[in-house]
Length: 104
Image 1 (cartoon, helix red, strand yellow):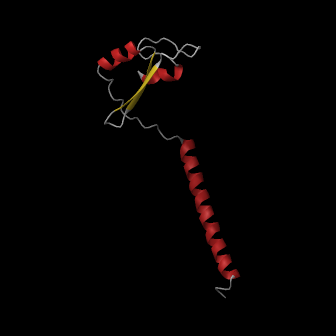
Image 2 (cartoon, rainbow, N blue to C red):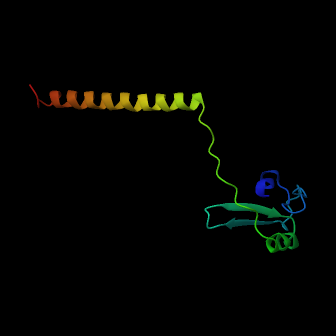
Image 3 (spheres, helix red, strand yellow):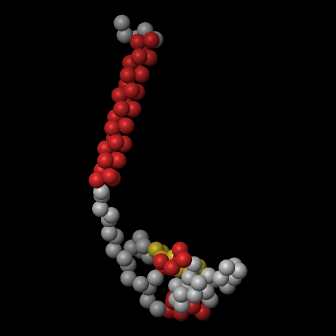
């Protein structure tokens, strides 16, 4: 129900947002204890009141997006870069200690 906000339409009647920038529009953010929230917009206060009188829509279950081969490859590349940075950091620390005369 709150998906229409990106298109700029009323979540009750589907009326598109006027280009003149009408000030009568009303936007609501509804937070629920299930860590879910809704963003809804209405063209009139009466539409908002009508929507609020009805029960809230069911909570949408969380569906994780599947990891693709590209995602796994990127993860391994980032891990390799961090490992390479750690190796270079250790090499730099060793060179600094040698430069300062710590180890002979």
